[in-house]
Length: 98
Image (cartoon, rainbow, N blue to C red; front, side):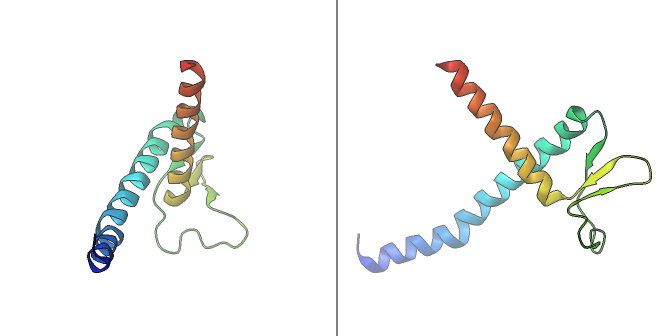
């Protein structure tokens, strides 16, 4: 493949395919956490996207205790937890399969 064609393919991948893959991965992680974290924590942790200015207390992190006694987790952190859930599922699947 010619060098200029390779650069075009790399640019297309970087600007089109990579963002789509990142969005799909983040959404799958968020949806997994949104569904499973309240179940695993018996309703003590809920996942909602943060509104602007909501998680602004320094030193509080991305989980904030609400007046109702439950904790509210920011969407980005929830995506990470959702992906960790999938990683654990994959690891267990590999262990059981062998």
